[in-house]
Image (cartoon, rainbow, N blue to C red; front, side, top):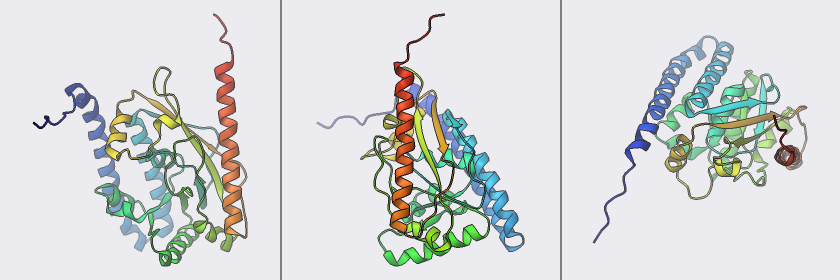
Length: 276
């Protein structure tokens, strides 16, 4: 005898649907504006880059607000043109970084075929890399070069996938070839999440890893009343002439910054509370 299919409880639906509708509306609005804005490429390319960055920041901040995601920046983002690398915990990283600096992302080619998300990513100027075809790398590097010379900002996650926040994955060095060739500075950032006291406590609980589907993680995030994202831009940029060495240095600096944040957090938890 087969069991009846599970249904989403009505109270959970009432909680989720308003957030979902707002996200879809804000995303559709962004897509519409971006598609119309592509017409400006034929007239004022520089204006288009500046306009696109502002719009992406507004969209990122709006989506963060809808999700109850409070973003705190401990330092200022790099001015354009910039190339930024960051650790990768969740799909929400894109919203956080968009709200902070409004750059374009590099993404795996599979995302281009995702419903709605793929269309939005293409409209927003995302560069897609086919990781299974090494011959696709020169095309991606040339796209990166074009974006930077036009005054834009590029963001990528050199781990290549999300992690649980407990340790950085190895950095893939292929995309570091361009800053080596151009002697272009690489800016660094580290990102972590936290939730209100009494809820899931840290980045590992909020990260999107393993076999969890996007929908399951999305619903889990919507089930939180609010959560926090802290992003730290790590001061001076890094330069290098060897892509593997540059990737190693970038990873070490981000790893050190995350370890320092963990130590500070542990110190705050151990500190005795002062009675009032």
